Length: 223
Image 1 (cartoon, rainbow, N blue to C red):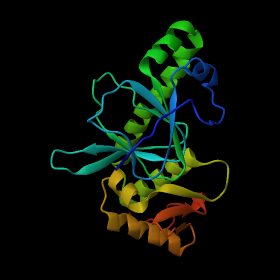
Image 2 (image 1 turned 135 degrees about the vertical axis):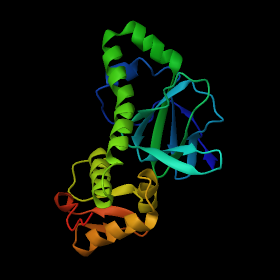
Image 3 (image 1 turned 90 degrees about the vertical axis):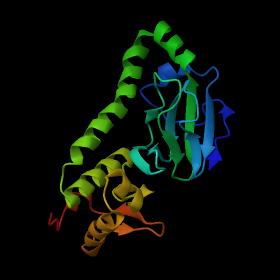
Image 4 (image 1 turned 45 degrees about the horizontal axis):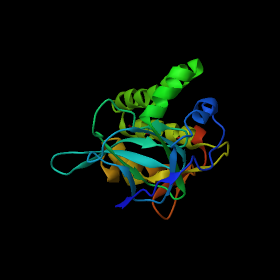
């Protein structure tokens, strides 16, 4: 596992609704250009930074007492993460896509922005609650049947990854999606093969999913 090499600055980031707020946070901001396998933090690390992923992808991991690893969320472009009231992090964050860029901001700068700019309060609060909304959505879809659960997740990941193109390749593997959905990998691979047979998706050499016809996801669903 590789650790991040943090550099001063924000790096190159696309325009966001938070630009006015981020301008207040430039002091002491740090960014990291990461490759797959890079660990952003783990439960062994202290909190103190809020993180923003501007390109690429990562996964949030919970490690059980037996050493089992469960993916609890995917971190995708535009997502904020790492804000906590705890002293130590609860989860690990591991990069899963090439050319991933993450910026971190010390908590004290967030407090400064909240104190000095009234606009910052609402914008930062909305960004912070997006992750909580995803957790709730994740719990809800776990009650769906197999193919419906996989289809709902793939469509949501497509929405979060989409840059406007029709066909899009998801940055996470089929095995990662299965882990996230608390499903056996073989079962999810079988659903993907069914979609692949009717031309809805194709698979990549690293077992990723390329979505070709999103409107047909769920076609052939037998339960």
